Amino acid sequence: MRLLLLALLLIVTGATAAQAQLTLCNRTERVIEVAVAQEDGDRLVVAGWQKIRPARCAEVADHVLYAYAYYARQQGTDWIWDDEEDGVGLCVFEDRDFRINYGKADIDFEDVDDFSCPAGATKVAFAVLENDFMAEHTIDLE
Image 1 (cartoon, rainbow, N blue to C red):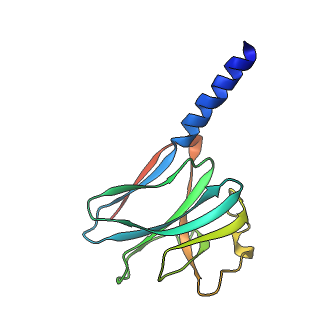
Image 2 (cartoon, helix red, strand yellow):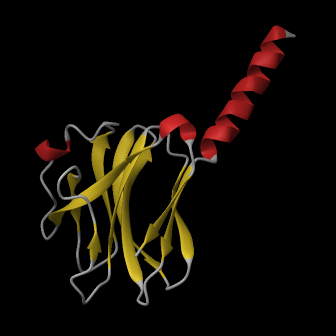
């Protein structure tokens, strides 16, 4: 009976963790493109570009257990949403959709400076958001 209760607790806890998410809301008048870094199994993966239309919100990351980072831009303008002072430099391809595998995940993004970008990719400053207590986060991009 105790094993059954423990198994149920683990299933419920796993379901709760899977609900932690990052939602970005576009409060501008142009389409925003977003790149997100998050854990995928035991790997850190950076992927983009997800488009968010004006006056819309989109879930851009889910099942985040520790920390994640994001970078948003309006292509064709100088508007970006990043964190140059406290952020972390992660690789992106400016001109196409991408998915870059950084290998074993470092939940604090401490080892990413040792990672060389693939040919044609550049590093940009991602804003880092700690996911305290599996919280859901909604951020307005203005």
